[in-house]
Image (cartoon, rainbow, N blue to C red):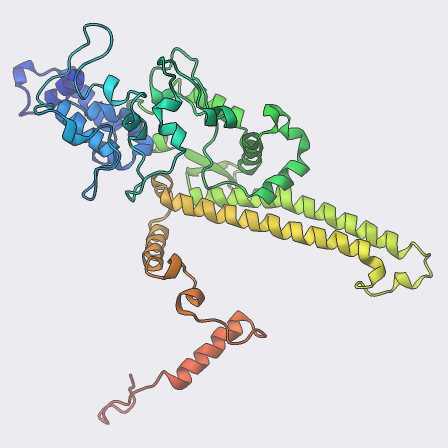
Length: 446
């Protein structure tokens, strides 16, 4: 904090005398503006979260940062690390000093107290969504008694033991939480459906031997196929890249920080790979097509060949002269063929439905992510925001006019296009009229 304050003051004309100003400090402050994102950094924390500490120059700024971290707004206090009313007077005018006994500081804003895992408020702090709603987590994760015994020893919560969802970082060189790699990918609500994962498992039994075949391993393998990126290779590449470039690297442009992508396109004349800024919508499109072409369509083709073989087997079972050779496809004697086709059709419908839901969920998540929104055209973002604004006014937030206004098809034997065409004709015949203007201009109507 003292270093941040000295650096900040050195870069201000009114904050430091010219005779005592350090050129190195001025240069460092310029770099701080870059790695913290400048004025827009706090709105793009996906890129600059790990360097926001350099903004904290005194206890007052620290307290305001903690309020922001806790989700404080004009409506409520959010989920703070402590009750603001319990802070003693003059807490921001009393400097934090080093601990004399090695047990941590005694200042109310000292991190040893604020983020002590034996405090329930420390575990609950910051669990607030962007809309001020509380993030729903398992109650054992925010209960200190589930993490520590009566003697103060750490114990593994039962929910973590049961779900195998707890990991230790054993690398002594990692001293910053932003350098700690997540042991598993974050799926959240955007994940492949049960039917799609089961099909992938059935079609790729040899890929699931690693990791005991758990659900996380199955999802990892599916994502590897969908993104065409091996999770282990990606982690190794990330670690190698971070040796020359990390989240706090100095003198890095936004393009380098946010990354470029290659989506398989090549120049038709030179056969050179086309490298372009990341586009999340293009990524989702390419990956959905890959699932369709590499998983669903090959399986469907395999099932069709099985059906063709069964059809040939049944029709020739009584000889080439049998009437089975020319009977109708709906003949009851072809029941085994019908069963295969029904099974294929039902599973194909469920799998494609899961893929559609995955595709739509990923698009929805992209619009809600600040990082991904930057890669989406501004017009798309405006249309999405307008749609969400209008659907918020409807029943159950639906975008379906049929549900919102109780307007259904008037006939079930015509197509949607025919229904719209019929409605337009009815509108112009009964509701749309023209008004004749005065005789001075008889050729104009409105």
